[in-house]
Image (cartoon, rainbow, N blue to C red):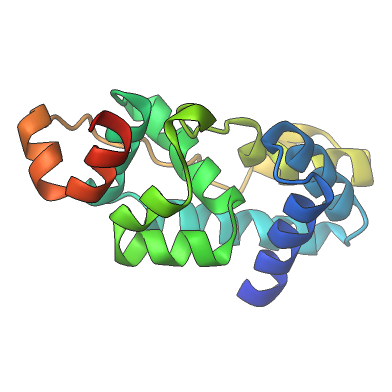
Length: 168
């Protein structure tokens, strides 16, 4: 499993689900179950790497603006959602968090997706018939984000396009 294969699975699951997050998780789990166990584990490692890479102040601020606040757990779910949207959305947001203003509107809701973080382990358990604890034995948990704070004025100043989209 390489990055291209990872993003293709994300893209294929998103397309099959017509961009409905809950359906995407089901499609992704199904696609992963068709792979060898080692590839499923490799997918999970890549997911965790991209998840960690998105742990930035700018993306936390974006999640805070979009979700009208953001706890560390909600930021974890926001980064899951960001990965689920695909490579282009993810990479653009890494470079410029304000690019999300063109991707999501206030009508979409808070941009969070918990379940996708479990797609690989669920697929692995279903595919191998082995215990969940065997999958997670060598994989450290996703690191928790630190609690961050910022005044609304700072968020509006640092990410004005995104602020205007959600609070303007």
